[in-house]
Image 1 (tube, rainbow, N blue to C red):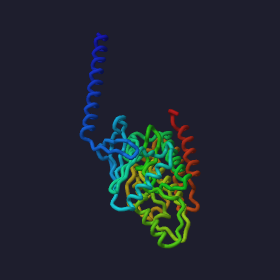
Image 2: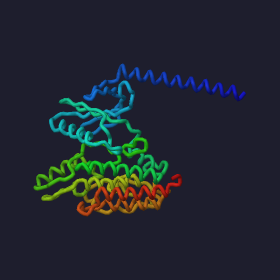
Image 3: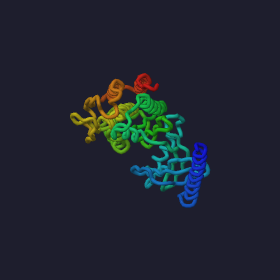
Image 4: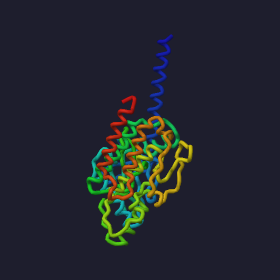
Length: 341
């Protein structure tokens, strides 16, 4: 009787496998016949799938590489004027400068007078999605080892950018993807030279306008809200501020400057971000906040590390090396705190 059941189960499994293979073949045939096809300058041919996101001047699509059927992401940037073309080319060149496990690689690209196309590897999810699941929606709580590993990887990606004399200028959970458990920093469209000399009020206003467009408000450092001149700014320090916000968001759901906890509440509440708000030291969240309640000692250290990076004066704010020291300390504590380590 048991042998018969086992035999039936084996046949059923083979039938399911054949059906799955047939379905995949039909899907591939459908893409080959009907999906928009893009040939990139490096020779890659991408079959475009559905839209998965969009920005001010760009759309992001899922897709596959023809032949290998590798899943990829296709970023399509609309070009209406020369500055948009130059901006797209700067983004391409920024990707070409790096070969680092915590920075998103560019697989191929092409550009015309009306559109630029960039192809990237497909990652499983974003840090924002993980935060939403664990903290905002109250799912499985963070494991300290996973938490500290993702933050450490993000810091290492930022370190590689800073070592080249550049600053990312828009570090946030939406711009950190997760690939096989590894944090990958993406979206180099806001990247620029780290050192900025502001010799006039005009220079300060230009930087302010750039930041208002390219740097997300709730992760934007104080010196980018209303820059003063004359001054010499190292905007790599603005990335460190953003890392402090990101660390807080990983633990408590959002940047400390876009959310708070109502009295007696365990879930974060979104509030309006403003320049004045970023100048105020964030209030301590409750110890039993959703997402952190199972490891209060670890997340107290996280809170302290975040505050250490959120120094209003960029001249006294830590640099990326100090941020890495804090991330390593959290990794060591996380490995100790994790019962499965």
